[in-house]
Length: 203
Image (tube, rainbow, N blue to C red):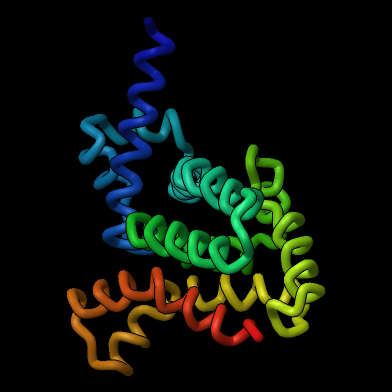
């Protein structure tokens, strides 16, 4: 009974932290605000997570544990390459729109702690591009796409999907978009990115 109560409290903390981090980012979030949102006192929050950084990491891992299996499944299913690119883009952008703080956190954490990726790689269902690489090589051999390194193609896909979230304030200014317009643009990119990539590589 006590263990179940602790699990429920931890889940409430992670849900509250996700909302606060999403709204205010890592720098703007306050532990007291997260405790208030979770309906607990700050001392109990520190009992579960000694620092905001540890709570941020736990929040990220909680969200990553939802995203990683989905991306891994997409990368390793039996869809043909173009369908795989479309499915990956749609699932990734849709997920990050629900967790927009994640890309900035990953960049921030990797710059501050390069070993962080090694920690992520130990997580269950960490995405693998092995099957994707085989499919790219096969598509080139069949004459379906132009010669391209699978790693370069994957980096292109990731970059086009991630940058609008990382560069959001700059992009909103450059294209003179308010929040509603920018959200529409992000939604459109669930198909636009895949179309752009596929048109660039297909013969």
